[in-house]
Image 1 (cartoon, rainbow, N blue to C red):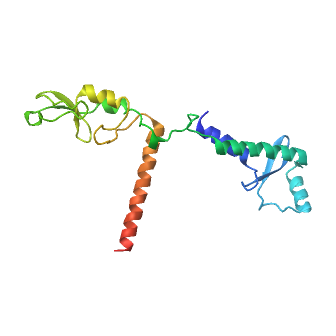
Image 2 (image 1 turned 180 degrees about the vertical axis):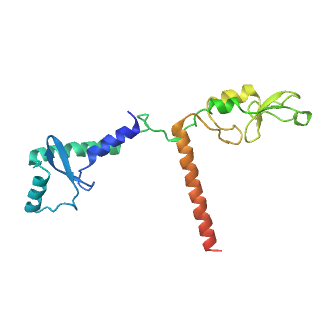
Image 3 (image 1 turned 90 degrees about the horizontal axis):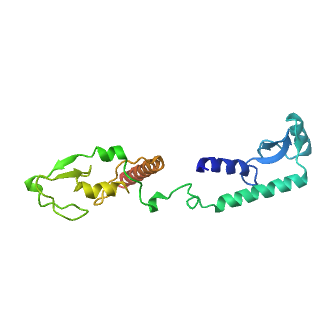
Length: 199
């Protein structure tokens, strides 16, 4: 079950708990009727008018108690649920990022090593490049042997040397990256605003 559908089901089930918004007050043709505590007065006359208006009957005390017990159980399970253990969500800040996108890896530029670069070493195997050898160049400009960098990028999307990230084919991780970038931009704007106020 996907996280969104699970959260939606539990959220629907939890509506009506004390302190959680609308409350369960009656049922009509087998369907639960909810109201906001601010919308309807608790006076007997107002309650009777409400039930008449919506063509429903109030829950009896036993049924209401049983319903509230089930909702309390659902909320308790929801609060204690570890979505990461269930495989519904991944904490990417503590997990290895997914592989780089296949199309991106296939289109990485190939560079022929010149004599002036012959002393450079591949950051993975630490062996020097040979003149006229073809190396793969990452967007960060670091050079690698193809036999070194391709297996690496099939496991994770970042440069082994500087951690520059390539796009991935994982939608959830890409959304995590966008969210992280938005938070960083917001942090920088606040820092710049603070600096402007006190300079």
